[in-house]
Amino acid sequence: MRRNGLRVWALHLALLAVLASAQFWLSPYLATNLARIMVLAVFAMGYNLAFGYTGLLSLGHALLLAAGMYAAGLPALLWGWSAGPAFIAGLAGGGLVAAVLGLLALRTAGVSFMIVTLMFAQAGFLTLLYFAPVTRGNDGFAVAAASRSFLGFDLSTDTPRFLAAFAIFATGLLVSLALMRSPFGRTMIAMRENEERSRMLGYNPFTVKLAALTLSGLYAGAAGAAYALLFGYVGASFATIQYSILPMLYVLMGGAGTTLGPFLGALLMFALVEAATGLTTAHQFIIGAALVALVLFAPKGILGTVRERWAKWLP
Amino acid sequence: MAAVMAPLIETRGLTLHYGGLKAVDGVDFTLEAGEIHALIGPNGAGKTSFVSLLSGRRLPQSGRILLAGEDITRLPAQLRVRKGIAYTFQITSIFPRLSVFDNVALAVQAQGTRDLENRTRAALARVGLDGLEEQEAGTLSYGHQRLLELAMGLALKPRLLILDEPTQGLAASEIEGFKALVRSLVPETTVLLIEHNMEVVMDLASRITVLTFGRVLASGTPAAIRANPAVQEAYLGA
Image 1 (cartoon, rainbow over the protein chains, first blue to last red):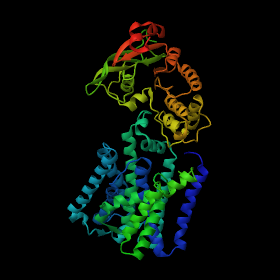
Image 2 (image 1 turned 180 degrees about the horizontal axis):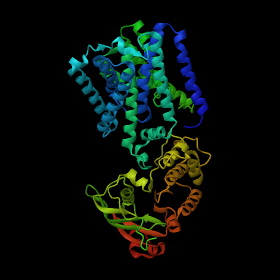
Image 3 (image 1 turned 180 degrees about the vertical axis):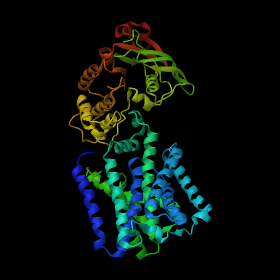
Image 4 (image 1 turned 60 degrees about the vertical axis):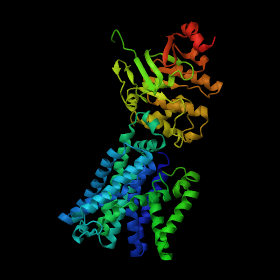
């Protein structure tokens, strides 16, 4: 896991270099889409830490995305916070809600964990609707232009928005790579592979999984906050089950337990939806068919298959 | 040094029931530091259940377990590992999809992350698995997987190493190497060995405890156990 350091870092930095330059050679429309994909990929990277590496199959990550989105969006709406503090609040909101969710839900495992996280996420969604006078419920609210400025840059304009999305994505990617090359990353994987053996090596599975879920929540919170501040909209639709399933699909497509899989999955799913929408109104069908094909022919996802067959060194 | 040292492990009236079945039934047992102690008995005698209680994988209904005088009866398994009780599984329990290196590194880093790479390589070299670091653990031969299991146990630097049928499925040549390895561990590490191969038991153990139906039938030196009529009748089939 620790070896091949040069090759691994070079690959990740090369991807980041290509992405950073993309704003110069992509049309503004595509560059904005790429910014959106990078934010969604941060969400998926967080999901990957819990599901792909630690083996925590959550169906409740929409709760964590929404926690970040509202923790950033509501102070902006109510008290006019600017983007910097609002983003930090979103990050903390995601981490905090994940920690509380973990304290309760990690008493269960496997299918029960999936159901319990799903229930908490639904409860979160209904809470947003219940407090509609504050949260604006299903209609949501736009984040005011004044709150979408960071160090004097207007995050609602193309270049600052792209750069902010890129900076958050790059940080998330490099942190998750460093984590996976650290002893703690190895411990996370040990939970996925053989929890009982890990316990008999002296690890407390509960605390390891709680830490992994909290990290995952920080990513989801960052993504939710970034979405609110960069694209200017906060709404309860982001707390629906659809947003719990999306990161799972991204991760499964790109390759669960690979550092680059979440981005690749988010990119391809986004492109697939775009292409399918142009062809038919039944674009959900095309996505479904793609996923069935994936599960049948490449259950480890794209990079999972690549790693297995050709590049064992991929982290 | 204190004039009287508490035994490394002492159990008093240790009892574990599965429903109506008394797997461990009031066992009093003493393990002195530095010995190789074998636990023998027919299948279903409660050997694995008994060491599960020592390692904390199961909690007893009644009785007490003392580690060097300290009551650890209710301590969670992972904390007992940190106090120096290591358990190697009867049915090999490794991380099959991780590399050999990562398997042992997980045990090593539980003791602290300083100098992780060298300590991991040293633990692998000790059992003779050096050179196989990059191999996926699940693809090792069965004998090598047993050695990996042992390396993980040793890497924990335990005071007590519990080996649950370690020679099961090993070739005769591998058993010789295994015996030499276990001998090299004492007296720094105390070894509690569950073993069916009587040759290995008689060769290695300084003391033997015989369990039947969850109770201690006899305990003593190999010679005394061999001469014990009750043991011969119940187990050795002489």
